[in-house]
Image 1 (cartoon, rainbow, N blue to C red):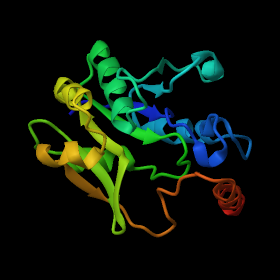
Image 2: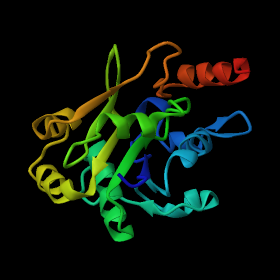
Image 3: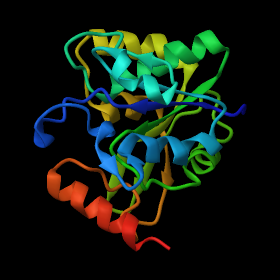
Amino acid sequence: MKQPLAIILAGGRATRMGGGDKGLLPLGDGTLLSHVIDRIAPQVADMALNANGDPARFASFGLPVLSDPVGGFAGPLAGVLAGLDWAAEQGAETVVSVAADTPFFPCDLVPRLMLAAEGMPVPLALAATPDGRQPTFGLWPVALRDDLRRALQDGLRKVVMWTGPHDARTALFDASGDPFFNVNTPEDLARARAILEAAP
């Protein structure tokens, strides 16, 4: 399997943070998004950002900014589809999705997802901890993008409702340290800053 591309999902409305772009919130010497970029970049061949609205607000990151290809804030699957359409243009076979508000996800996310999907004719895998699946962290095949588009156009929104019938596999990660901790509230952001300050 060739090295995948990455799509960073930043298309949410951040209602619990009062709106705006969570990825642009300051964290340490950068932003939530810059931490996500630094963590995923060594694991993939290239990356793009999924976000709606004016792409100029992300210009400083130098990434392609892809809006949802279906309307109505269709959730993370719409961002995945944006990534798959972009990957198809690049001649790539797979895309890994990561969330823009989850700055401490595993540094071995991509190899573990690829290992979980090994041998599948159409590689599809989601990250999980013993506490449950992490549906915004997955390996997605370009070959299924038209199937996903039809599902979204038919109103499907839940990730596992689509991945289940396609026999998605699971890459299981240890829950210690809460690797998929994401920032939804001001309190979460304070916790992320504390985690960063305590890191060796």
